[in-house]
Image (tube, rainbow, N blue to C red; front, side, top):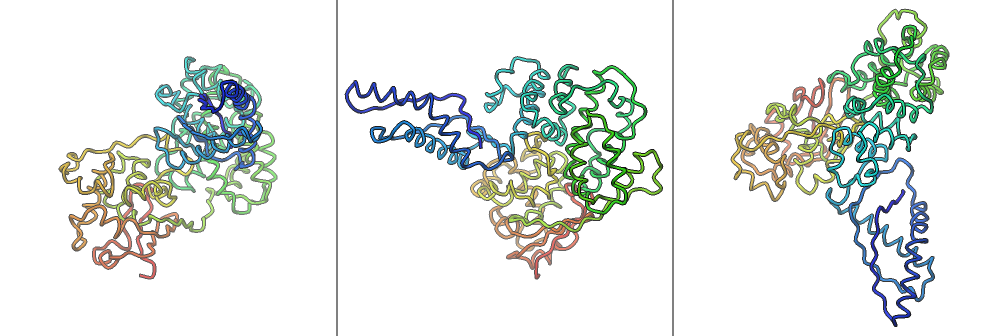
Length: 515
């Protein structure tokens, strides 16, 4: 953990004679100016949680502290003060809303969100970007390259996050040739070599940076595309010198997309490959500007395991035609526990209303989380099961995804006054009309359920725990128990429930454990 205080104002209330108050004020000035920062560093080092911890921006922290500095030396005073600051920070983290606290999964995630806002022209609207105000007046590309070049250890991860969020091309478009070279240098440790870069025509043939929607949603499909890029990058035509300004920008985008697919590539490294030595030799010949993916692959190939696709990669890298299409390994079924698995019951209704395209993964996640009730929704938003059901990519930042387009109540055929009965249990957020419409459609055909309040439906159906069994062709939601499970069986809500759009071609199957 690292604590950075941008601005600090202190007010002292001191007791005693004027001379004593003056002396105490000087002591406290010394504590603030010389010892408090050191005490904070010591405490945060003692509580270090690792470099991959969250990054948290706090807008304003007000703290009242009583100290008997007549009995404490300056070092002890500084430590007491630092402890009080950290306690207040932890409390505000737990209780503060987005107008006071902004949370990011990691420092690279925070940087990626700022880069995306800077490229989109909205950075100056966010209160939590004050530490970047020194570059606020620079052109976007220059500001981005300047900031990232000072944190070279994060450049690769930032680029991967931007690619996963679909904003990498917007960022690169804001960069001049000099900006791209600066980013490239920060990422790889060396400037791009005009004679060592893959030609633009060859990169254009690799395909778009963003995979096709259906293909992108499956682990095997994304891994196939990643291996396709690897093959293309290692088997390009004779590299010819062209203007350096064109190729670094293209290659930066493609390498960012490749790095964004690391989870899929890592998951694919499971089956033995017969000749990894030849692949290693091919990787060793890659130019230095491909150092980031090359070194990552080397590290993952240290163990003698790899997928069948690596055999094709090794063969194609040597210029020999592949005799058969590479076969991806069949992963074992993955299981996710979810305290809110019952929200999956809403997916068919959401699809029938045509809400999925206009809400996107982020809106679907919000809608499913909201279905369990206003208070539990605060935790449900972080539930891995709901994240999967909504189609939210594993390595995508919500801050970088398209915002949902919430329909108005009248557009869904709802009178605004019909929503009032749900305000206590489910709040009055913009998702309420869509949730009410989906719940009404869900309740049709369930005896006695039409017209039920959202609070009642949540208690009986949506706020139920269970296990998600993830397979290539299906997602099985196995609910632990449902109070009115018999109604689900009678209403045809168990078993095969179609192919909701968010599951990208997979079937939804609903079961009740031991039911």
